[in-house]
Amino acid sequence: MSSSSAEFYSFTVPDAQGNDISMSDYKGKVVMIVNVASSCGLTPQYQELQQLYEQYKDEGFEILAFPCNQFAFQERGSNEEICQFARTKFNVTFKIFAKTTVNGSDTIPLYKYLKKEGEGSMFNAIKWNFTKFLITRDGKVLQRYSPYTKPLEIEEDIKKLLAEKPSE
Image (cartoon, rainbow, N blue to C red; front, side, top):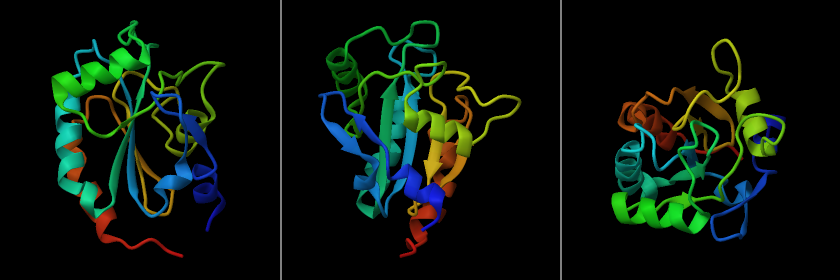
């Protein structure tokens, strides 16, 4: 296992209910990590994210949503309110984590790693809500996708990764 995949699996992050979740729980799975917001023009992407999750979860695909209030204060609610919104309005069933910080000095270690491994153009900061990272079954960051890349536009990449078996 390379150092970068071992590194991805070393992170532990609290979910929206306050439980510490280890990324090692996702070993062997294809994972999409996305910073979300409830009051953004891109919030309807929840619908396509849920569609992808329902279609591929049984093949080993996971979506991990990280609510963030750093972009125009578009995620103001509590963790409970965020989950309620996503589940009620978009029938979201994938994992939602605790509200987090993806830029600046308080960036959580997982996002520091994602930004380092999945470099953006010009600078590595997360530029807006719904920036997506696709992680291989071996825990490597395959690619970083723009907030404006619709989830269904990533479907072919997901299918390719799901077809690959994890190396052991």
